[in-house]
Image (cartoon, rainbow, N blue to C red):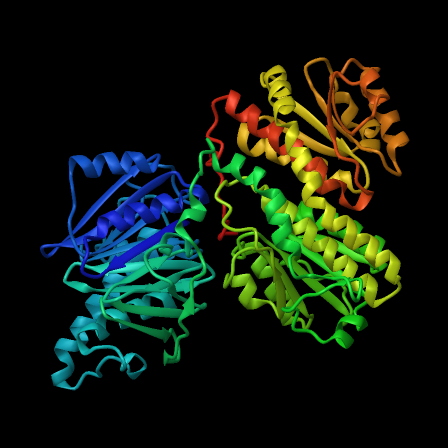
Length: 635
């Protein structure tokens, strides 16, 4: 993986390819490349490192052509080198391929193709696809030549394709049928400058429909400003794309009808707007994204939340007696917040599972268990696989995600969109708080279905309506966070401690610091310190302690005392007006006082800012941290 773009039409392809790859940089990558078809040849340009390296090479060696594909790679096989970068060439430079995903059986296919004389240059699994398509194409052309001598013609399942393109489509279809794993890919051919074939299995791919031109991308962001018409490919589908036509084929069933949807995205939404980094911009967008998450979903008449996309009847929802929340990374931390919210407000038992573990487990679940899949991108491979496994076993499934039309949004029985807008920074910020707010509204919804009274429901609504203002005040800690960052940015270990609702916040704060500053950090329930982690405390290891006013304030105070007794520096996040903690802590960050169930949404803000400023001071690439990808579409 990570990002794919493609163009076919009347314009030069390279400018769109570079612009599209630029918009996909947020996904994380270690190399980039493009291929165009020009004057009867495939022209491939690729470089390891940042996209600017590729741009510089293209400035020195320009490429032309009205058809092309491009890719930003996040390594799964082989290090970041020019050779391992995509696109990859197949056969005698007849085919070029860009690929997201992982081919699990690439080694036996590679061995077979090598024995047939195909020469491999890279250490990737993706190069196998290019050579395999070239091999299948040679077979198709041989069959086509022999057709007049009684050999069968190209199979009828691609009969809707133009005759000159049928051997190419059939070659791709046959190659894909031999692959085990996941793929989102785009293919161009040296001898056919009027055709791109795109295909998908487990890795997202979309086609943008223009006027006598078409666009391909791994998500919709590169298409904004170029077209407002989009086709989402489903698993096992191939798109046969020419400048003036789009045909969608099921790999096994043949031609199928496709739906053109309206792309609701403005190109300006992915601009920096004066901020030095997308991450900082997205941190400061959180008051508005929280408003967007709640807009139209809080009913004062019924003192409840309203959701239009659950697609399960109220009777079915009332019959549910257990929830299973599954996610990865930051979304898993939001799920932990959701566990507290739903159990406290709705009195429904909740379990939280890592999606990467759930997909391979066989937990005993009764028929009245509902699965919630939580994801920003809607494309996380582990979460998608866990959701599909639970659906296979007959459980109802709902999704909480940010990207309209994403794989998880389509696979679930119903769901809720966050409406947080594009999140470009690899380290999630605004999506996390939007997920927590959405889970709070779900807790209200299910609570009102059961034993939560009208007055209690109205109180929760009032608190949710006040929340954007509280987050705006929490953002005023930016200068304090910068000062504290300057004091501790040289440290190599941090501990993050919280209890109850703020334990997931501690985990998320530690993750943010790890992701973007490369400092080792761990989050713990504050009381668990004395059961082992307290051995790590020394004068060089700061502890970030979350201790706002609430039901466990005195307990966390005792845990803070334990750290100070062992000489550890303490950064405390406290409620406004707290003077007691200041006597013990080395540094204090004050946030607005809110009720316990909303504290994670407020206390996470200074932790996001602290991680951001430490990373900046250490000279790290905040928006594109090393080794990370925004949308993890491989296992």
